[in-house]
Length: 177
Image 1 (cartoon, one colour):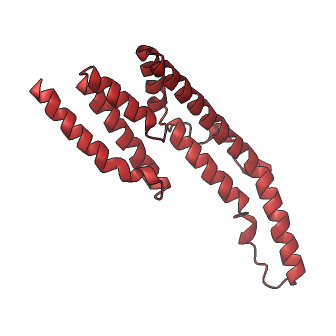
Image 2 (tube, rainbow, N blue to C red; image 1 turned 30 degrees about the horizontal axis):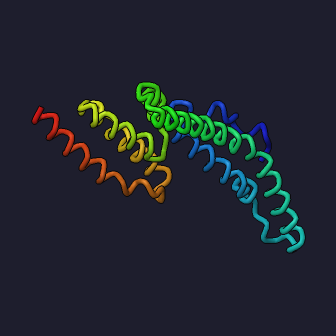
């Protein structure tokens, strides 16, 4: 496996939300780290010392080749995390509209953690803007379902029923007017 055998991280998964893209970039880096392609060769007839050298060399090369994917994922995560921190600061200083703007950007980018979705749901619910609260819950379910296809063990997937219940409750409030 050589560097030019791999697509650039900037060209991968660009049509997906940033949070989901970050997960896929990390998984790509992990696959490269494991030396998946070099291990396809048949090494059984080689002496143990040669096999070990090959494995070690392949792992070192994999780590080097995986680095750009890890860095791209880290940049995405940092950008989303910084935006979340700023949104929380705005909310604490009672600049709710600025907080909403940043939380909305994070959910648009498919942030994986529940915090921006929860905060937006609560803010919209306090404003009696039930349609937006429902939209936010639906968006988080959509993101979690996307993630479940590539990372079935992601712990927040268990929150889908909670968000479905929130939607039912909010729909009832919307109908009650």
